[in-house]
Image (cartoon, rainbow, N blue to C red; front, side):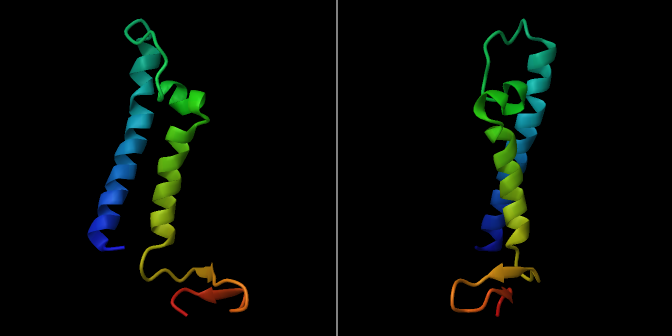
Length: 87
């Protein structure tokens, strides 16, 4: 993935996470202004916490797959169990 795409994805995941964390606070504190439940109500509890978990998984995945990572990765059957990235 091109660096600019990774930067865009990182920014998008961060904004999504920020929104999931910031929107429920006023909705919970000022519940009379927000009478209906939304995707972010209770930090996404009504949707299996997906709105909270997915941006975290995305940020983790971008970090996990960044260039120059020395983590060992699964190479598939028949090619050895694990190999250093780039092997």
